[in-house]
Length: 330
Ligand SMILES: NC(=O)c1ccc[n+]([C@@H]2O[C@H](COP(=O)([O-])OP(=O)(O)OC[C@H]3O[C@@H](n4cnc5c(N)ncnc54)[C@H](O)[C@@H]3O)[C@@H](O)[C@H]2O)c1
Image 1 (cartoon, rainbow, N blue to C red):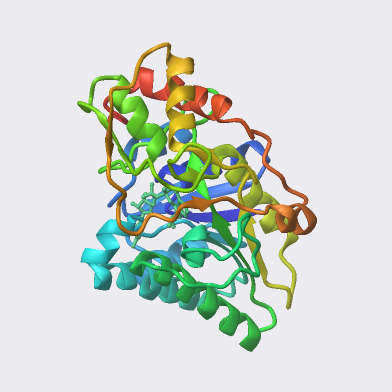
Image 2 (cartoon, rainbow, N blue to C red):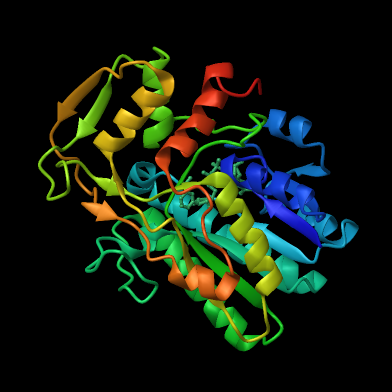
């Protein structure tokens, strides 16, 4: 298939482009590089359009010129804290921009859409592991922006039976390409595994752990870490399963929860180095434990995570961080 990967120069998008190419599809990167990397385009060697998704002329041209069948939409702002301080920017880029993408797709007749949603749509769940039927009560503008898009997609699909979509709710994307070609380079970096590895590399003075008195196995927060290549493969599975009149809403997680302390201990084991840790108070807004019930992804997409242990995930990340301590060249 010819796949427009919106946000393809970013972390998860770039890994998906690589897997799409390997699976024999024709990915085209579409990215304004506001948070992505030019180096990714050079590494991946696929057609790329450097433009904003709100630039209708560019987007229409890209959809037509590359005879796009499916849009995978990774492009968004994705920092919970930033979204609290700049909600309008989040609703503009995550919601309004997506409407623009859908309108351009409609104009050109592109009917297949795979959307990057998030476990943040659940907020603080009542029941763990989280199923897709859990209440949707996001606690940040970021989470609300993703839930709004899910609702827009459902309404649009109900109005147009030819429009097919999957909304994939990722848990904690982590790790890097197994062959070391692609990595994780966010600025600022807020995700636990890269922050731990940057601390080990001496790029940060210490790692602050927020809260040690949670009702979990060791008092620290528990999350579901899913390897980025597994996420990428789930997108390909979802794209192949899209059907008229059957919207897909799916969790993408491993089903296992690991605590902050377990991640630190695993990183120390993988790298053979100690992490300087400072234990601080709880941080507002952090849920106690979030991990997925991944059963629906298995039954609907025929997908399950291959890398379920944090050691493999951290090893793949360390392989990249050790060789790219300053991230991508550009
Ligand atoms: N990283 C995670 O753990 C995680 C978890 C759940 C959901 N998600 C979602 O997955 C998606 C990808 O996340 P990521 O970590 O790869 O983010 P990222 O910031 O690395 O990638 C997003 C890409 O989109 C591009 N972009 C943003 N706005 C654009 C616009 N208006 N026009 C063109 N390009 C634009 C950026 O330049 C960037 O390359 C996001 O939608 C995010 O909300 C991520």
